[in-house]
Length: 234
Image 1: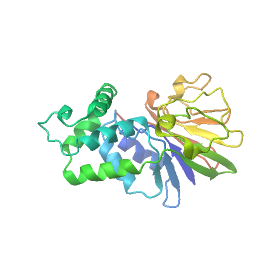
Image 2: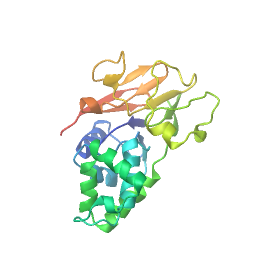
Image 3: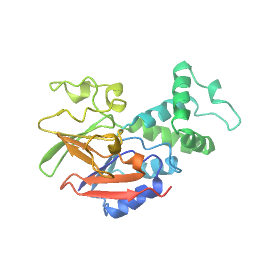
């Protein structure tokens, strides 16, 4: 079976509950559509667990990108040192955004980690893909974190860059692919016009699965469309 979730945001306990809820097996595949880190209490534990599961496929979110970019520059920082002493101008801008957008838990967990753990986390974040494609239940799916900026129907997916795929929310009133379903996180479904409360959104070949605004982890089984919901425990 093939499943998709998004915007776990450090909710390691919720992630484990969701795996139990869907009865996740070694023969299954789970796509995680980015924003694994920040906000929740256990971002590094969540990353470490995912890294040990070859059938969990991570896709890069904007929070993951910012975390990786900043932490790569401060990988050798000590607890009593200032991050600003390690960061270049671009890194400092991202660090400021990160601290304003609930990145401090991830930052402080990284500071508390030993050298090997820091390297393992950075190595894993570097593996995140920009997009994935999947086939299930007779349907084809394009999976990205946010949306597709500068979209053109004839443009191959590998021609889009990082900024096109991890920051731009999609136009949910627009059909992007006639023959494929665009699966996204990033934009809470509560913000999408016409979406039922506390539910994933389906319309015009869109499937949106980010319920983090409502403190819910949503998973969808792509083989048959079944939905699963876990309320955050923090």
